[in-house]
Image (cartoon, rainbow, N blue to C red):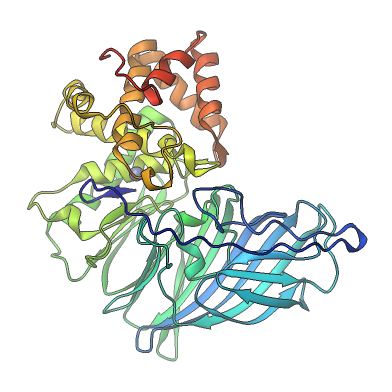
Length: 463
Ligand SMILES: [Zn+2]
């Protein structure tokens, strides 16, 4: 994610707590009511691991109603008598588990499902949820405006660290990544964009269904839904589909269109440094809604708010930032949000690399500037929920990346990055994993150096 202007995210402290009463019959116990991540209380759930979501949603901008069926394929990681999915602000009509009706209760943003029979550990099962209503943003959306926004011409569902639960039932934490098939039915004439490879569209009775498929595991906050009047461009790049879309409200030959038009070129620049592009499709979507004050690295197809393109010139630095996240954040995801610098520090550094390459500021100058303005009392690792999108994560995080590069030299540095990305591709990782990997690859201790740059309270020497 990148904000249009650097701003401290306000914190709306809405704490979602859920009860957890015992249920010990035949060794089956309820799955945990959240993922245990203190940065996102209530989000995610324990006791199962989702493999795939098949989403079939329909949205009518006329009455702002969304109806959907979600078929979630998961595996029980413990013996379960019941389990939970995150679903905010919509009504559930019916739940089936393995084709059988299942009892369910919808408490705030938690859908509690009690199947007819307990699910033994290791059992693969499917949950089919039929639901609908008028979607809304999350009430605690101060961090990233999370969730569903109705717009004049359609809708935008987007946001970090949470947003998915506003349009489908989900295990809403990046530690449970899954593949997706997404079908979106909208009135004829509107575009309906989402992640991954386009799988065609069909029209019937005045409505068009757009189909998308993401075959690489994806964290739920990286899913997106954009519906409205868009100029959609479909092509190929490096043998893979490249789909970009720019809101029709923005000029066809303006800076937004010119910026996303360079998506393939920027992705190639990054691939030359980070290793092969990790997904089966490329793209980008520029929305015209001023409420989207950020850009987000939604998998294979980032979404950019209009504020990045108001300067009269193209802005490819934000494109480089969001595309760098395809490697750092999307392919290799955080296991917990306290390690978000593993996403933002590297994406910010990639932005500096691209700027230098594209005739902008030299990396050394950017480093010197950021170093001079860094508040060393604010840690990069575990910055606190309110600091998730702060300068310590982005700017100080990128300085730490540069310090590592200077310490080990360019050859080793890029070998560390490529090896790290290959080793954890499609998975999740932590700061300790990264430090350990860098040390093994460089063949020397790096922990003290990285500690000083990431969390030390006094400025280390300028690299
Ligand atoms: Zn970012």
